[in-house]
Image (cartoon, rainbow, N blue to C red; front, top):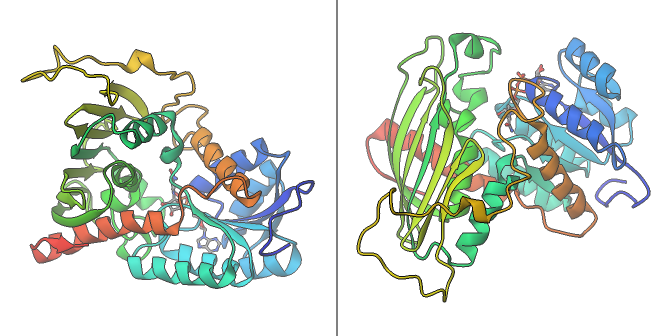
Length: 368
Ligand SMILES: NC(=O)c1ccc[n+]([C@@H]2O[C@H](COP(=O)([O-])OP(=O)(O)OC[C@H]3O[C@@H](n4cnc5c(N)ncnc54)[C@H](O)[C@@H]3O)[C@@H](O)[C@H]2O)c1
């Protein structure tokens, strides 16, 4: 069934590669979508991990994708290996003509992401990169308001990730906190979601200037603090702040500001929105402050909103947002909608993050 969509009456057969923390979340989502997908193979270089996941969610166990593809008919390969091992797995799957879902970020560098893009071009199959918060109701409301011009001219955006990870987190996998396999620290691993939302809302970044440091952890190569300023193609300006050194760990926030409105998303939830619908003739006020600005959040249907721990599977991760992204991928396979987060989209986030690292290294602004 390679390179074509599964027949409408068939369940798409999935090979899940990497049965670690996020592999368990994908396993749960695949179980929840059992009317449309089937976990046919679970692959991990540690067979005990693959066996544990297969016992919970089904599928035959393998220690390499090569063996799985030789033994089982597969439609979709889901890549949940350490980031610096995404490319090799995804490219093998694409060369075998499979559709691919890759965990975030697509790879550790823009050049390696481009290699996957080239393999996809040759395969002609679908590839999605997980960026589950694109599917949060809060994000969809924000993007719709921006699209309709209800924030006016966008002026500034802030992505702030004030998290804490103990040393035990970095010690829990030998790939964590390494340049080669994690590709970076607080910004690349933890911050990439919020950077992706910043790019989705503010548009293409064109220049970045940054400082990074490692202030609260040992035995890691990468940063646990990154701060940066960004200039967007539209002329809007932005601020990035990402840390895993803010004890006890607060939230991930996105602020989007324009001359007609503002939006704040805090821990996936829409906590503030003020828009000026075009043509509404809302009076211009010469100044405004929190006390006289109006939070219009009650005007929106937020019943589907879910914070980071709703239905939590592992490490406080909610499978609900991942499920929404799977729904999009399955609809794309059926030709009903486009893949909403593709490789080129995720490449922009990787470019801004690797631009931050280059700027911090050289002490100079980096054009993206
Ligand atoms: N979307 C999210 O919110 C989210 C959350 C956590 C992790 N992630 C991403 O998921 C990926 C994995 O993270 P994790 O925390 O699950 O890591 P993990 O270390 O818990 O799991 C990775 C698994 O991959 C296996 N593995 C390594 N190389 C392999 C190979 N070549 N073939 C088969 N198996 C292999 C390892 O043995 C391990 O079991 C990373 O890219 C990370 O950024 C995304």
